[in-house]
Length: 86
Image 1 (cartoon, rainbow, N blue to C red):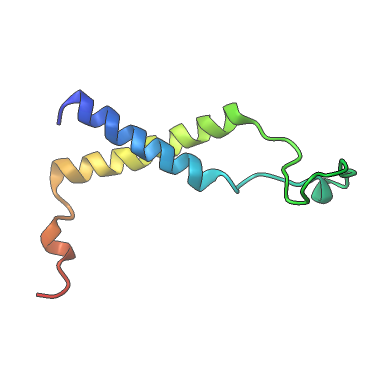
Image 2: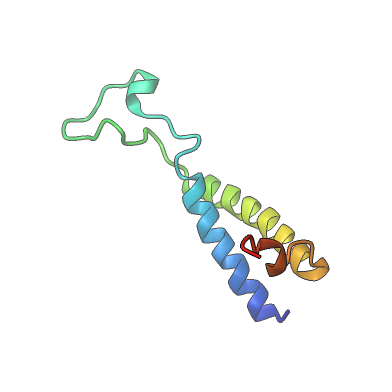
């Protein structure tokens, strides 16, 4: 596998991880007992830390890509294993 393939696949895992992790660890103003600003959605997060979020997404993407690369190298799960009709 070339380095361009590795970086492209890791980037896909990173973006997917960032979207998967969006709802976790976020508290609304209502949950914290703070007063809402007029016009604010009730579901809006009180405080969002993009740096922390991207760091967690990078870590999750690293783990998922490591599993993907190990499977690609050792062939644990092949397309033949996923053929449920034959």
